[in-house]
Image (tube, rainbow, N blue to C red; front, side, top):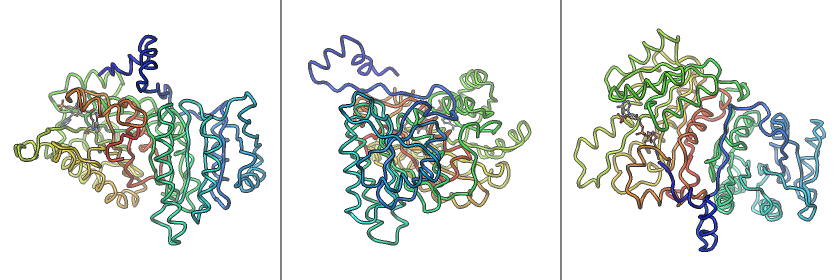
Length: 473
Ligand code: NAP
């Protein structure tokens, strides 16, 4: 559905009116237009900084250089020694970030390694860097802060500092969102530095245009991983609810990355499903995911035609909103069965046979499951249930070299949200750091990232893709 306010504020007339009246102007976001590139930061510079004693610098230098970036440093910053020593070892050239009065552009990306923060005074290094440089970050800039996994720290000071980064990142994201810039946070397991590469390639590029204010946990995972570009070539992916909206975009983005797609949708959507899948050169299956034999039919049909499943995306979902006192029992049962029960049943069957080794499972949750909404007790229960489910099933998938994660979309422009009344629709769009709704592609990009074996360090997580919607933030 068209966001008329967004279009108005980007028209010459609307721009002058909104300037005159001081109305907010949602920024234009830069979204990916092509597959994951080998050198997505080619021709760009990244300002790299660190707290003294940080340990991810060598891995960051290696990945950022492989991504084509030239590395800049802030010459007067406290954590410089650790960067200089790692760069010298890796024979990577460093340049100074130009001074504000030099007339040269500032770096469009800032990456800060805060893994060395162990006492509150160590956090001062963050203030020093961002106080001096954030105002010059370009529109649609990217900031990434890397720290330790707070809950895994045994030292109280280290745990406190790791947790402090979450608040810092959320606040900084709210400060720069009006320029379309994003700020995200990686909590990195000790020893998982080699797994950073895929997360950098996602969070520092237009593939994550609508992800901001979020924390992603990167762990050691299954060890060796391929690099992100090309990692989905020839993979067989099943997507439910693929006829339209977010599901169709997930199918399209998987195809863009070289996967073969089997799209599933309700038999009532057979026509739309056929159109979507024939456009993508994929295979369509008209199937109600709540059917008792749904898992069996998916396993059998995909095995016959493609040999097995590498990726399954549980996207089909419905709403039937009513305050619980007025909610008929069939509204409860239908939403619980489609959004949650069917996922558990299908996966249970596929875990017996049908999934290839190293399979990736991605489930679509919602920020409604994190914050709750009046009239959505049924829907929110299912979407919160998914968050618990992926965390619970992660060890089982890990045993098979695979992973299961969830995406929690915020307000996304689809048929589902077009049915909302005007007031909540405008609130859903505007009350976020990026002050606009997301597009199905934003969810698809995150799903496809999680579907890659290159994201092996991420398992059992739920990532919000919501432009830092203030609901439940
Ligand atoms: P959508 O436009 O309504 O598409 C959902 C698709 O799933 C439809 O084609 C639908 O077919 C299909 N489906 C429903 N029940 C099914 C069943 N029993 N078996 C097979 N297919 C079935 O929704 P969307 O906005 O793209 O949402 C996709 C997912 O994202 C959902 O899980 C939703 O909860 C989640 N989400 C969306 C937003 C948002 O802002 N749009 C926000 C948070 C989360 P029918 O027409 O037959 O129902």
